Length: 361
Ligand SMILES: C[S@@+](CC[C@H](N)C(=O)[O-])C[C@H]1O[C@@H](n2cnc3c(N)ncnc32)[C@H](O)[C@@H]1O
Image 1 (cartoon, rainbow, N blue to C red):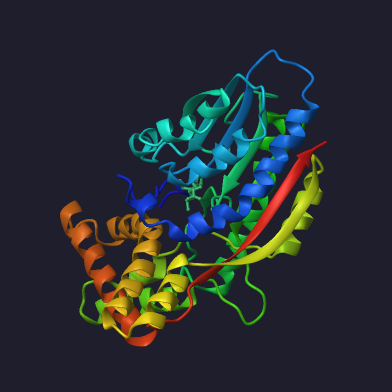
Image 2: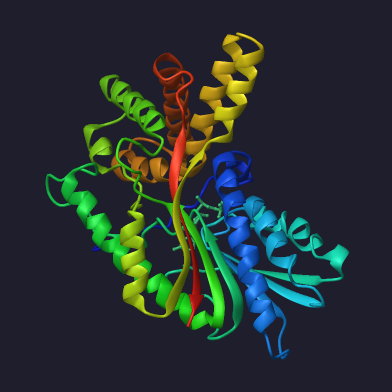
């Protein structure tokens, strides 16, 4: 058993993540004013011209949701002839998929005469990603709720136990502070960092509980049919923590390098919620409910599949080869969709995010 479990799982590759990231897209739209305000402030203050204005995204995945944030960052950069863009994610990310979005990312500046140059940086953002004092604005969308490493589960402990949640909270708080310290070294004084990530919902609300219930129910059914083991259920988890906005504020303040310009929590509904409502206002067709179940389960599967496959490899690796593991994953997906359709049908799927804009002292 390794001393720590590294979070090295990428989102689903070959563009599947981007195609199923409608919810992240909606969340990203809410961060755009924070990004363009940050750039406008940094650009206004800039008193030197010894390097191109530099924008960095931490946790870009396949880059589909990077196009609009970079466009928002380029808009205030009047008279900037040359801009440098760094797209960072972990080395395991499908950068071949990211590279297909680079042209789209760069062409947004062209009409204003801005030549953009993009580089991809395959590095863990819990390490230093760029040289000191080298970037003017940074942003990270839906990525900072992931921890870097976790200890193995204790004997008899399950992934859903309260003790494990406490461990994750403790680790996330340390990781988040280290993320802020690293970014403070990379960004120049007066520059901004925009973050949005999953947070603990207010009383009475949940983060996509109806999706979670469907996935858990499908796993239990697969245990009853001897497809998954109890040990799989004990070990299966996402290496994430969803902090309260108050805790985020405390942690940022404790680091000391940053002034909080904006910090608020917001519910972001999956866009399929609204589309289903519009379809149902016009007609009563069971196909629309089926479409909704498929959309919201595929959305979550694009994020969670790699973690499912990794746990399956650990707990069933001797019995199942790669192709068989993919088939078990597909089975889980189909069962989860059936459960969603049977029990949750048109239930709201939403996430609660914290949006933060920080300025470096
Ligand atoms: C849910 S995706 C968000 C992608 C994109 N920003 C969006 O909004 O659609 C989270 C991304 O964060 C990346 N990520 C998580 N931990 C990371 C780390 N330590 N270093 C770099 N990237 C990380 C994941 O690989 C993944 O691509």
